[in-house]
Image 1: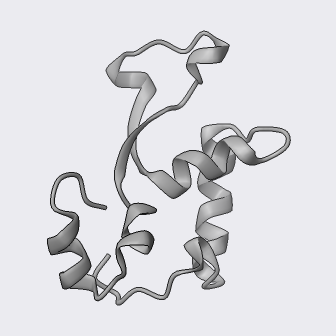
Image 2 (image 1 turned 90 degrees about the vertical axis):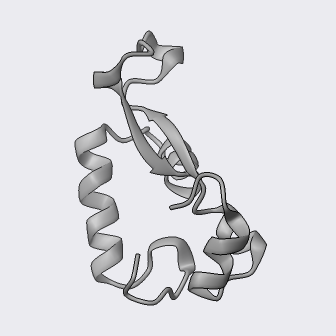
Image 3 (image 1 turned 180 degrees about the horizontal axis):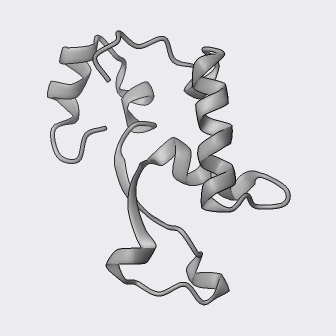
Length: 89
């Protein structure tokens, strides 16, 4: 993930800007604010933009633990993000 230097991130991983935008670091609320989740350290984790958005598009929305399992399964199958990144991430 990157936070401030998209150009450097694109160069380091040979990515186009539109692909790198999916990997921008965001603050993900484990319990969504719309469900009463607070803006506290124990309810916010770092997540790339893609993961942050993907979790909320599932029906029903997966719990943080369920989503973690889902992501790990997708990574093992080589499907997560639809990106083929070098093993540096």
